[in-house]
Length: 435
Image (cartoon, rainbow, N blue to C red; front, top):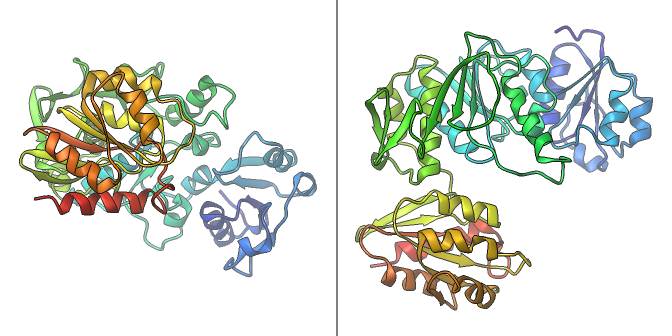
């Protein structure tokens, strides 16, 4: 892709937009960075890049750039973005743009849940296999930022949201990973089908020599790439779960209890990561070595400690019902749930069948504790605590050997804490203080 002498418009002054602007500048383009925000949002942008704050649809219609690169946070089909697209020769996203300047191999990872953990696992496993790898994309560091480095890594582990996949054209991952799918982002998409179609684009440009790693039973249509399946709950996949062991082709790949990862959802994240890196030639031994030293992201089903045979798991980042339900689905041991926090007017009644099926007891705390107790006790024994520390103590007394105490609040933390991080840290401290 040659940009010398071309006018390039970059939409969005955040991390993705700034990285794309620097890359376009490096490649010889005449670059203007547009954002609807104030001039303060452009602080630190290189002087060679023209900045256009307070951008509007009128700005877009007057833009004469031949190439428009949009950041994933801006709605592709919105009036603002489309006003720039109307006069452009090409309208693409930052991921598509950056991929055109990257010559290494790409593991692209999408799904509604588990993307970040899988992205980190792939990076660690590939590095353990002796190759360089950078985790990037929706993970936090834009792909364009990696491409700007003098020495490119052999591989990128690229977390891909539906927003990034909306705007690809030729982007082709060597390995495409589809973790799972459930309804999300309905504030951006007109239907679940539209959201699903955006994610499916990860497979769009793959060829027969590429690999598609797909959870067994997921509806992804016919694929050209070689398909590898995984599942922790269904038989017949290429990677399956037997007890705590991940097996493939009848052979044990690794035991999850030698790692800090717990739950069915993490078992599937590990399966997907192992399948992806084995497609690139990484051995099971290297993958196991990486897993042994892997610490999951803080506050996301994070194993704090095991005391008297009871595992204590911090899922403080579960600030909504969907996240709480996902955490419950991930448990394979008798569970004591600690939930509660700020009253957000959410309807918790749909959780009752799940609670009745997989929870031994619930301890509720926070602003919403009385309402939660009234709802949850319809399905399972529920206790009320006046503080998080008291909730942990009640849970410890109720948990038998072999159980899990799961801290998954299901709502935000602002009644008692500054955010889910402080709340999770408080849970960690309370658990560490147990004797």
